[in-house]
Image (cartoon, rainbow, N blue to C red; front, side):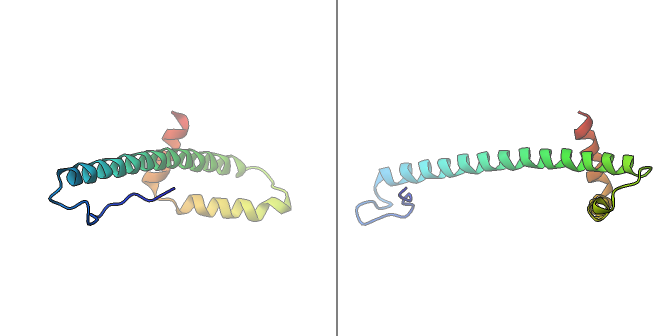
Length: 99
């Protein structure tokens, strides 16, 4: 895929009215792509928040159970990571999970 030209060439100068139209179109396209990327990141963040909430609930239910020896290290790592999350972030994660 050829990259789009942003800067003027010898045939396309700032004095050419089409130059500004082309630059504005490229800028609109770039903003559109940026908007799409931000929307994707917001969806990914919401999914990760749900996972964090589910992990927190999972850990809270494990407190009274005996885990297999092979799972203890993974459970401890998960518990540590969940405990390191800020309280407001964890609250948001749990709310998203129940929504």
